[in-house]
Image 1 (cartoon, rainbow over the protein chains, first blue to last red):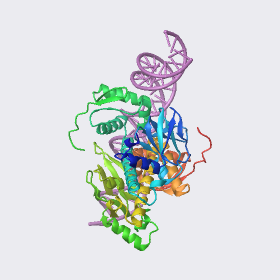
Image 2: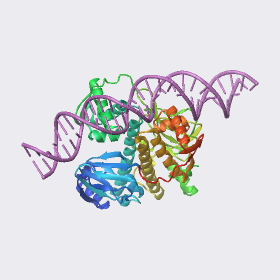
Image 3: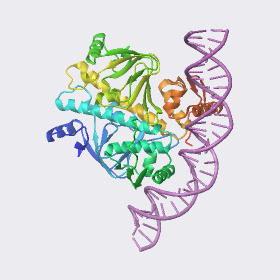
Image 4: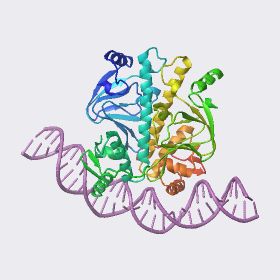
Length: 218
Length: 218
DNA sequence: CAAATTTGGTTGCCTTTGCAACCGGGCGCG
DNA sequence: CGCGCCCGGTTGCAAAGGCAACCAAATTTG
């Protein structure tokens, strides 16, 4: 399963074993709702989700929870904090029953003695770089003024990832609202309107875009 | 000057020279308002701002500009895109007259032959990790519902960085509005109200917080 | 199966804020 | 000196959307 993560993809069986050993991989199970990392806890390893879904959030002063990201199978969380070995106010919890593989990054921090370590270093950096780009996308979405604009941006991105106008979103409505930083009921309202206007169709988490293939370039 | 960047800090003169050579450093000057990188242009190197300020933004379909970040002396832009060698719709322009040192990252991508290369690799990764954390902060700010909440979060962060309740922000009002993704006039209005309410004081870009050391939750 | 819980949709109300227009001060430049 | 430009603040207006309350369907639990 770990090979679903770009960090470990296309490794031979032996390489994978060595890589996991190098990073002192340890699997751990969590029940739905369980806290994976409390705010202010340090993080000695970063997590690779093998199964289930995990939410990364921050609690603000008023106790409102802000969703930073939601992590599914093959995706990771906490690399940056773990790499920098900094404390962080981030709260991580399991949204469903989940299996997480914890990976320490000391092994890929210093000088690389062998080929495999070097590969992992490079891939780790690439992972961080890709994460940066995804966060840019998120910031772009959040910067939009209206809910409809946010949804358009969000859907466009989903469609790009899915490679077509039909896709499933990894959120329930409440999660989606948190991701877009809007009110849940307002989100429902806007989704209804967009359906009424013939822009989209949806059922549960499955969405279909009816957008015209944007004629002009951006 | 490059030693203001964490990538090059505390290097000997020879190391710095070698490092710059390794990354094929090239300095370039830009006039205020000049385009540094147009949307869709590829980026063969990332930029280290030596002097002046540079804005990283994205133009959305309606032509509205969304500010992703603003980069000052000693800070870098475009590392992720450059490292991944991906095209990107990002637009970069000089907000003031500026000097930029372009650094290629091929040299620090593959296997590291010498000590210096390894150091640069590690530091580059650390830079990306720190950038990730800063983007998290930004997402946190953007996720707030009201302008006042956004400002509180923003100011809190500024105060943390500055180590005290007085600080200067690196934006003019329009830039600040773009950073917080709110309307400029609404921002002005809210700032006035916060001053009226005794929460802050400000003149031009200098702000002073008068916040009580947050006692209880709401 | 019944009860309870979760999830998504609807609606009315009212605040916030985007928008547009305008004003005034500071600064640079001819 | 005077003109234009940039920047920041103000304000009236209208719309968007947060909030709360509620309902219906779906899903889980006993």
